[in-house]
Image 1 (cartoon, rainbow, N blue to C red):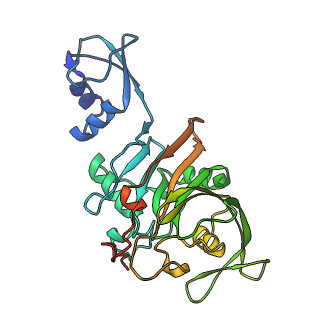
Image 2 (image 1 turned 90 degrees about the vertical axis):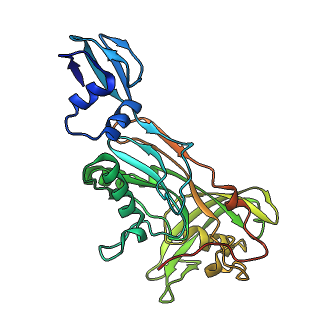
Image 3 (image 1 turned 30 degrees about the vertical axis):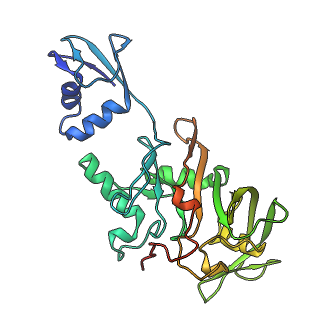
Length: 303
């Protein structure tokens, strides 16, 4: 965007004039995530920088990548790791649905919670389109599109997105790395079962895993998804006698109630608009790696 100043003003004042009607918070966001050229020269991003009358200001939006963003908390559950004018990637805490129907209250759907956060932040109604989901019990990176057209573009190429998880397991995998392939089927008991061959209602599933290190008394495993079926990682790891810590539904120790130690920590893909390679990852909190071995955790899955 090009703009020629009619009056001398600071960069902040200029942004408020150019984007008439925006909030001060939004103006600060634009300054933070843009580059500015004045008469062809980069001038930095200081809000109090004075721009003289007649100067030509060029505004170049930058993609926002926040790999070291603050972790979500119960009080502040929104942690944005990447955002531009097309996409947003945020970290969903465990214990909340990725998205839900209209009857669900806002705090039971991360999709609606994130929309509400962006609406308040930007001072205008924001709508997001869901691209993929995580199990309610699983934490990790979720990607949303800012238009229905882009949602379809990404979902059509979702197999090309590199998706990785880490899990704490009760046993060490043997062999330490490998590929699990079978067919998964949902049952009336709200539990997914693995079938050695295709049966009516089943879907092919493929999971690649590799042992990383010991996290005594548990074991850290990295997982790469080749398909995205319901409860896929949890069922596959349980099938090789390595249930995810806290996953009582699929055979983990049920002595104590714990957060399931499974995190979608890595996404890498080609941006459908800019064509840049976007790589986003995070490291879970220390609490993730050190579940209590003596008592229930202060963790509750709602609903």
